[in-house]
Image (cartoon, rainbow, N blue to C red; front, side, top):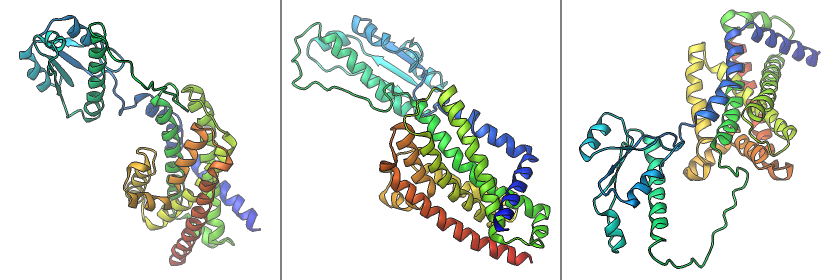
Length: 373
């Protein structure tokens, strides 16, 4: 009877979700347009940055430097006068303004060390930080290439042979698509289970269920398997048709192994959603709780910033979060083609965290239902 009750309670949750168009649209958006926009927009990437050049040298070298800036990293450079530099940056027309002084080529060939001025609009922080390094590299590269025609340069003793693994094209959209896909799995599983519980409390259907011969375990298990199945099926379709199909992101590892890890994550995150649903008294309160829980989990899990760059204390604390281990698992399987021998620690961690969250949430769920009887 317990298995039958859990099954029918899960069917009830699926029918309730089907009658909620907002949640259905959220699921479709999270696994289609959200992933596509995260992969193609890439706001942290330098792309079409506006740059102006003040060329007071008018030499072969200065023309060579100006020609080195081209799309997609930069817009075609605009040649301006020194008087226009400040006015254009004040108006926000240029992110970078490169000033090449008079007699720059002559001083360089004479062995002097002339300076080039680079003005940066730091209000565009993402472009300013990345673009400054790009411009410095481009200018130095062009100067070295120019000087090779005028002087004999020593052959370096060591030649660096660069081999890029797992992403030979250094395509940032691959990383963006996979990480957005991973983050949305955790986000939706928490939202769906918590919202399902709060919706029943607001509609008064929890009281109806309490007079039926069902236990709190059966009620919670029904919500967990139903919402986990919805997210799991949606993630499979998204991985095959959006990430691998539309965005052409190569999947190196076993999709079956990844989905097994996803199932363990969903066991943990759906339990967490039930817990948040028992804490919140209304849907607005649940939304505020999600902001306090989801944002730190996503930012500190390693999907946005590598864990190694975080303080050690944060690294150890975030090991208690299920999506930290899921990010490691997803990067290893989907990007690096790892097998079970590599990711088994993450599987064990997800299973332990899921069992702990389920037990804790079940105790809280029973207590909440006890106050309603």
